[in-house]
Image (tube, rainbow, N blue to C red; front, top):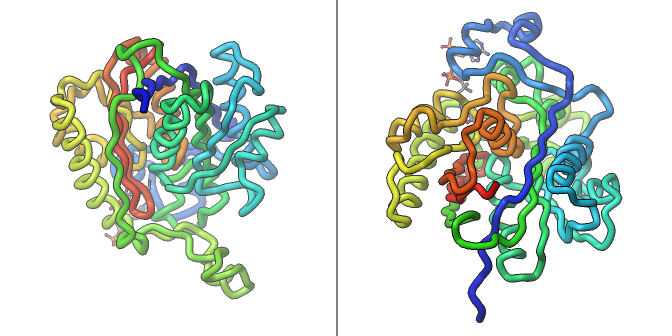
Length: 332
Ligand code: UT7
């Protein structure tokens, strides 16, 4: 078997809907305060869609920006993977809707469900097609319209989430100085009951009763998720660093899932990361589930914290539980 090809991220595009939902807005909707939200989560505002805008719309906008950055047309892409927990519909897949909206020809694709770890899982999945030589250009998109599954009378969840999308293009790397290096992923289904949406699936198909019981909304045991996230994210990142002969201080940009600023800083401290390497933009976007990591990549890029060859570590924990850690060298 020939040696697998090194795979790089060659372009990045992001999109958030223009409508802002601020902490001041939420103070009028539920019993909460700007101070509580900022102290406990680090969030100031989040973007949410207006009625009629769906996940495929955000995903398509992000994809268009990534294509434009690389000077490509949609049909240059051979596969589209959409990481999401809020598809437009159960079926067709959001990848099909994005393909159609982009007008991409001779492309295949599918959706990937792993909640907040879905972007990193999709990144590794897409990378396999490039590494084997099956494809030269794969589009990976993380997109979620969390506002479509949030109960805006539940203060424990409605202050956290936002909507957004980010897309990257994967291509063969010219050499080993850039591109994806290694990853460590794990799922633990025993955590399923800590973060889930019980209604609408094959177990509890939608009825008046399921809607009355609010089963079509996100249900979360925040503290259980918080503790698992800090412990497990740190654990996988440590193992990944160790097996690559690296220390936390070697990381130039730590780009974690943005679920809670306290989870990010606790993980970063335990890993011994340099504070300036830790990318945080949860204040502006909230938790956009599959979109947080590409949105944070964009922030890192805009802040001048991503240069060609820089060592980057991605990390996430999400519903499932799903956990991901990945190492790469930025390619442009
Ligand atoms: O990406 C998916 C993964 N999700 C996560 O990673 C979420 C992880 N969990 C968290 O981020 C945090 O647990 C939350 C932000 C969800 C909650 O923060 P917390 O510090 O764990 O608060 P808590 O649940 O322990 O609640 C403390 C108090 C409670 O009041 P009592 O029982 O002490 O009187 C809550 O009712 O804070 C209350 N509370 C609020 N107060 C004001 C909960 N939500 C709010 C709110 N405003 N929005």
